[in-house]
Length: 215
Image (cartoon, rainbow, N blue to C red):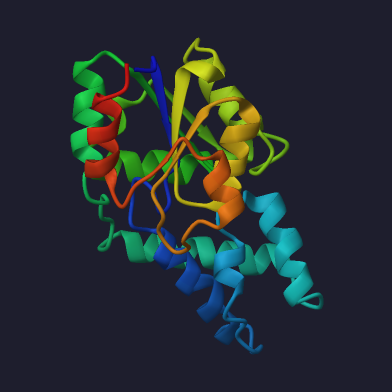
């Protein structure tokens, strides 16, 4: 069993990825432009800088930063009453805590939003480190965020599981030298993604059962 575990937040710990997917699409109405139904999925695992680049491909004439801020504000409002841990999340956190495995959150979301959600859900105490997308230069699929999270825990990346739902996140974990474990949310893994995953599970209950069997 590894000495560390790093978790993505949106779509992995929390059932919030669906909210972001919805917000990226529906915010188009506020700006009076046509909805692009794929834009939400394209944003999976990105930080702000990457999201703005993807956004510009769809809406080159709009102010990307204003749109991004509107999406973040909308999701923050929704999560005030609709913030749910995904099945098995608390159970795997409890198990790792019992086993004295260090834990971190590494998410493309801004650090402030991560801290808010962790506090709101009552799980901040589990994590030794928290790294937001606004604290690194290169977001997922670059390895930076997981390198930083592992380093902040004082661990080598090879000693860390990474739990992710997005393609960008899995690629990032693989490039960092971590052990990528995928729990699909909005998108099922492609053949290329499957090749770099140490495991793919329906939920944290299945992932936990597998981890317990790992030497």
